[in-house]
Structure formats: structure tokens, C-alpha cells
Length: 151
Image 1 (cartoon, helix red, strand yellow):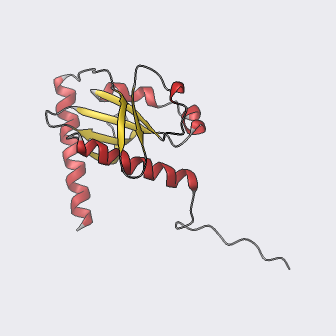
Image 2 (image 1 turned 180 degrees about the vertical axis):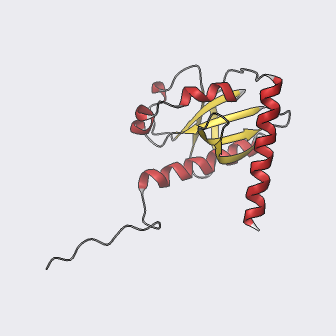
């Protein structure tokens, strides 16, 4: 009787997920250094979930889509849906990612697990005031709920 491989658990390592987590952490640190407070996996009113959503000091909404590799980018068709929900949109990738694959109408962040840098600034597309207010309230409530769950 052959012994089978152990059943994978939640603690099993997945390189793509590990890379994405490191990119997310470094990007969140960069955003904080830029004065933008971010939360991960923020669900937008359209039902899409942004990898990172950030709120700037003047109420500007920033969305960052983290791409751990070329295949991740090629199979993702949802990122254009985010434009309607932010003032600025960025991709965050590692320095190994071929940045010329990414659309020029988006911002570009190069990151690792410790930080990052804005390599290409995002164009600004101002949100309508009513949408900004709704998103800001959703962001604040979501952040507060997460903080309460943590304690």
C-alpha cells in the first residue's frame, strides 16, 4: 500500500500567494509613507474586491492591484472595473515583473516585502462627490469593524 502525500493545510506554502502577500505588505508600507492609509481586500460597492484600497489625507481614494506574476496579470480581466471607484489606480509588482506589459494609463509601484517606490504616477480621475462620500464611509466602517475584530 502506497503512502499518499499529506493533505495540504492552510499553513502549506504557496509561492504565488506568499509573493503577493509580500508585495501587498511592502506596497501598504509605501502608501503609509506617502500619507495614504490602506486596507487589504476592500470590497467595493460593485462587488469587486481591491487588493489594497487607500484613503489619502484630503479624502482621495487610491486602489492598488497587486500582481505576483505575468500569469496573474494575463488572467485578470477585472482591473478596469476599478477605475470608476478611485481617484488613482496603480499596479504593484516586483522588480522581476516586465513592467512594459502594464497599461500606461495606470500608475506603477515596484515593491518587495519591505517597501516600494512609485515608478509611474497614476493619472488623476476625480470621483464624483456623492461616490467619494459613500466610499469614504464604507472604508471607515470597514476599517473600524476590522479593528474591533482584532481586539
